[in-house]
Image 1 (cartoon, rainbow, N blue to C red):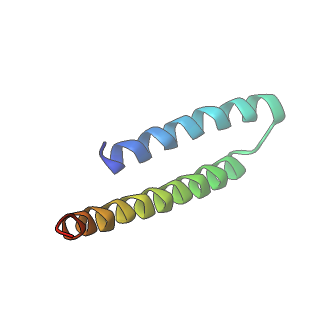
Image 2 (tube, rainbow, N blue to C red):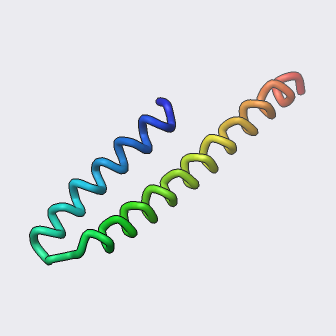
Amino acid sequence: MNPVIIQAIVRHLLTTVGGGFFASFGITGSVLEAVVGAVATLAGVAWSLHDKRGQSQAKEEPANQGQ
């Protein structure tokens, strides 16, 4: 799946959940924006690390098949 699509879905889900917290607990909009931004950033970093690890393993597999 495209990383941009996943990031958009995560961002929208976090905004929806944050809206529920806003309605229930009175969280301010600026706090909600900060939390959504932080979680979206961490999700992007995690996705990038996962993607890089997958690419490095894919490069190593053909080299190991000849042994």
